[in-house]
Image (cartoon, rainbow, N blue to C red; front, side):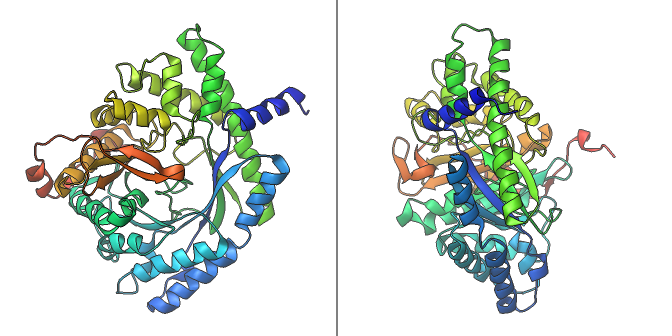
Length: 451
């Protein structure tokens, strides 16, 4: 039965509280595009993407108009290109250019999947793809890249950690004239998931169907507005309020996902429950934590408040949707969250506190600017630290840091739009080089032995 109050409440959320669908992402398998001739393979890739996603943007815009629900991004994820390019025996950068051309042809914002999965070692195509990432991201506009270097089942590939520290630096150096933006399009994962709709880490896993639609919802402003009505409630009530509003947010995502699926003629995949912030005023995860009772995000108690928020979002959302997946929880990207930016600039939020917060939220160290002279081994150690949190806690963690080439602590990079701006945050000066250069495999934890 249609509830008029629920309709009016949803309209208010959209108009006044920044509720939106952050992305509808079409996942496309490229396994049937593999060919030993790179020109043939790239033509297959282009043809498949432009055929499958031909109406993705059009359908998204139709849904926006019909339901009045803003859909901020329409995106594509594809099979990790290291798998597709392995048969070609040459530089995979041509695949990146093909992906970029296809993304422009169909009108999507971003395309993810210039990726490699190396948690236990390197197979054919992996090293070539990883080494090509800086060039691929520098010469394309819409391509995003990710590398999975560890998992709870396998442990952490320390050789891959070392390699990725250098790759992150090279991505920033090759795009220094564009505010080092190449590094902002690269994510290093532990326990990467196959159905993530969010960039820059999205790829279409080999266990997924040929084509599907995944949805990423948003709504930090809606959650904060709901909490404002209960300034004196105890923490149990706060949790209940977040669960209730998360249910309503997720229902919107379910509606958009199933509608897009029907109109595009492809299976509906999942709704990712993550609260994805933006630099816009009133759309901040940090401000939710401050509404719960912190003077400033980053102070003592921040991790506990974030754990409460993440748990309540998942519990509320899981009852509202037929298929939950992706990363699901609360994102804490510094540059994309107005409250996080303010907290980092004030000194209340440091990278060590952010690392602690990643143990209880979605993903990990996200959109963080670090000094431009940071050594590659230090970046590798940051990746290893974050991967260890994911490995031991059986959760997805990731690192997306941007070395601000030519800048130091106190300065900032500004990309505008959803990527926002971020102050350069200080790091420890002591070297982790001996640890990183040992190489090898960090063993999986004991609780990985579940079979």
